[in-house]
Length: 196
Image (cartoon, rainbow, N blue to C red; front, side):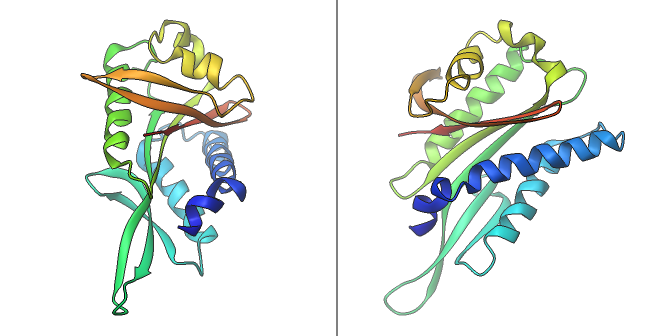
């Protein structure tokens, strides 16, 4: 799968995160502070469609069991019949609304649920990413974000993105590796890759 190998080498992932932060900053500059996950999906979809043009890959939103965004790759079998296969899966979580806080137990459980969902999608030929988007003024509650604070404060603070760690979800564990972070003005976008 060519896109799996080139996805990080070409820096496409970081460029997409940067595109998200810039779009959010533009919205806030226009005083549009009511952003939703669907807005982030839209930014990602637009960016990927533009950057995957003329390839055998394309993004699709809310598919494969309500996964926020999936990059599909078209392949031909030995008979020349076209098949599509989901190769990169994304789950997105935003913290923009007044009632959303990092320390809120329900919010932590939703993130863990997304981790577990992405783990279920993980195969030898796929990659899975969790993306968290928030404004800096929401980061005050991170110290109370018991199970996930290490992901934000320790793992992403270092430049060693090869380190991975485990999060307990249900009666299972999910292996996670810190991905990339992009901060533009007051917008923060963080990503983690779900491992086997």
